[in-house]
Image 1 (cartoon, one colour):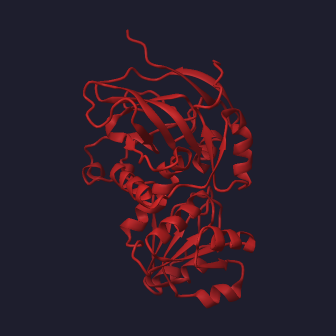
Image 2 (cartoon, rainbow, N blue to C red):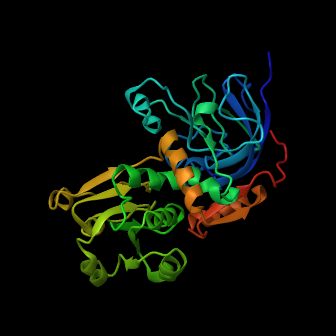
Image 3 (cartoon, rainbow, N blue to C red):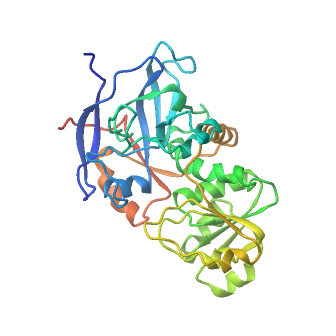
Length: 356
């Protein structure tokens, strides 16, 4: 039997979430597969939740990582869209059923049997391992082309953080010049929402629980205004002024004060994923006909459109690049939100020691 491609990565083996070297094999390249040398991989809050089994679905050992940029090293004979040497990306998922209602409508990110890039189960029963590793083998239909104009390290978080905010902004019309967008939280997702909002020529207000990031939001990222959600006077003055809100916060927080910022018929989109439930009283949305939606990353076509838009406008994430042997420290710092705004692992530049 033909052997798969040997791979080296770092994996979590239990609920401590501690990552250490791990040797495994990628599947044998199929006719429609692309083999990718991983160059960079972002560290997302989802990686933290999964590695520590905070969502109760861990399939140990887990090689995290779904914000992947790399270079094609080989393609199957049926691959027409990519060739060796192409710079490509892989995001949150690597396959879907392609036949259900959501897949047929181009929303494969909501397929009920979606195959996640990490900690998922492929259709052959194998557990998927992510981009904290040196090589991937992925079906060509789930590989994305990364514009040459973008910094590769800065482009990696676009594959999750970028599309997670871009996709609902497009879907719900929160991309129109002159509209007022509120962005709750200024982390990995939030700073991307500010950048896309400004590229769409919107009025952007950052909403944060403390004034600590005011200067960063206004002077560095170019937001138009900054609201401290704990300041009742500021929140009252801003009530009813926003067309839409992108809520990126991954910790528990009250929704009602945020909904009061929306105009009648305004749209809130929740993209952060707190472990605890969020309270949503009916009165907060009935009055004013306000709407609340969730969003999970984006489709392949939406992600490619986002990358193309980012390439045209020079949009990348603000990142701190680290080597793989720093990854456990990076995860600890991420838990404390001690990063501006995304850790990205320089996989190609790291020493990936072999281990069982």
